[in-house]
Image (tube, rainbow, N blue to C red; front, side, top):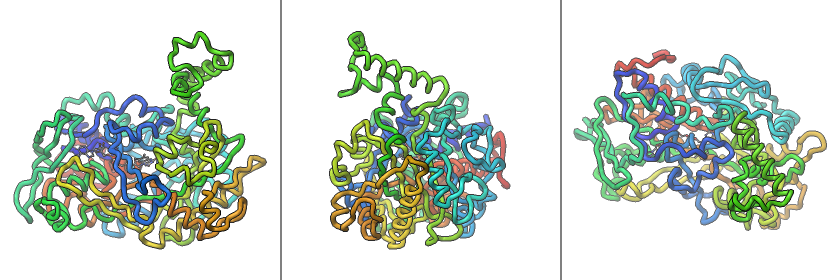
Length: 607
Ligand SMILES: Cc1cc2nc3c(=O)[nH]c(=O)nc-3n(C[C@H](O)[C@H](O)[C@H](O)COP(=O)(O)OP(=O)(O)OC[C@H]3O[C@@H](n4cnc5c(N)ncnc54)[C@H](O)[C@@H]3O)c2cc1C
């Protein structure tokens, strides 16, 4: 029985049910993903929608000074596919050294050589001439669509060229070797197939798998507690209690095992609600402690990024362009250029008629060929390299290039930035015809740890998410170095298509005596980061291997209970976390199968 059909859970359910004699139940609080989730460029539109987003928010610790209400949004997908149905689709495995460090720290079986077969097993890479690919690291026939937008947008080619000019060579960031400290630059490999999102629902469950008679997918099932038998020292998980949309409580009994794949917030939340966690914290809110497990919900890791916006006349993608790429109906909202009611199209001016035709042409191109602006999240360019401050086994910095301006709805509502403080003239800067790019300065080996703490024994009350960002001063030192390197890449923009200067929030410029075009001081960059750092949505490590689960992902102290999702990472990988979580799902499925005599179609691990 699996709780949570997200990046890991959907993979486990799909793989285990390949054996017709293995009966699998998948409980998922959400539903099947809506149609819009398959359109990459519309990904942000699903956030702040309670039907598909858990809509957590967190205390950002020392960060967040320039965010609305000083809260950091923590979106999580609430649907089959989980956060892989709502994410920005960057397919990034991590540095080989990340996994070797996991294994060296006690996660036996999780070294790079041991996990590479699971990355390959999932992947269905569409070949592309636009990027460097390390062939043997990849697979073209797995269920998970991976592809590069075609053609690459001009601002993204420029970004890669700028990185190369700044000393970061082109390379395959998912290759067996991500380069030395100099790192690699590339257009993004995305979890997309022919321009449509490849979430773990679409890749692993949709179609034949979800019709298997031995796979019961129960949607709208919010798990509220793990059923436990026995006492401390002799505890066994026997099933799960869950609530359906009508408010009814049900129980489901597991013949073999309970697998928690509810994500880095959902899995520790369920353990805590079930009395598995730090005794004092549980008893403080009236939950009987079944197992004193002090690390449950602790060691929370995430990545932070500082959004640096640059005017990019001639290459930045405007929000108007994105609207047109989504077809005529996307232009009919309040204040849109076309009438709200298509029946009124008879009265269109010649300009409106031309606009409508162009929008219809672009939508048709996207639907038939999978190309056009709609065909990626626009997180389209990336760099990984070292600042020189970090652990030499890996890279400690990433830069993500978005060739798009963003509007008020995106920047103020979704990212939760106090736009009145960030921009000198928010209305003008966030206008739909503005051409701008964003470079996200993103340190990827942070040391600060947050925690997830129960606020209530009521399972519908969100846990308290305390991020503790910048708690360790080392993280700020790295952020300043990453921001500076990002500015250096921007300064190497090719040809006559220069970008910039970077937009510095006016109140910070004034406070630090900054003048346009000057190099920002460390003090300014630090203040900038304390105000406007944003989550990269990589919540991990809250049930980490070695502290809560063993390397076989079995909860230590409870029989027949495993956790398999981003929460088990011993440390966050130095990159985006969807691909490694899918890998965890693949490896978990093999471990569960081997322990229970289940015959998967293929075993790729050493056993
Ligand atoms: C907005 C956003 C953008 C991102 N962009 C990227 C990106 O571009 N590239 C990348 O690599 N990573 C990205 N990530 C991160 C990545 O998607 C996650 O790390 C990954 O999906 C986590 O997988 P998971 O299986 O641990 O959890 P999830 O995929 O979140 O799955 C957990 C599932 O469990 C369900 N669940 C939770 N609690 C319960 C309960 N009590 N009962 C029943 N069901 C429950 C949830 O509804 C969900 O379906 C992004 C994440 C977000 C939110």
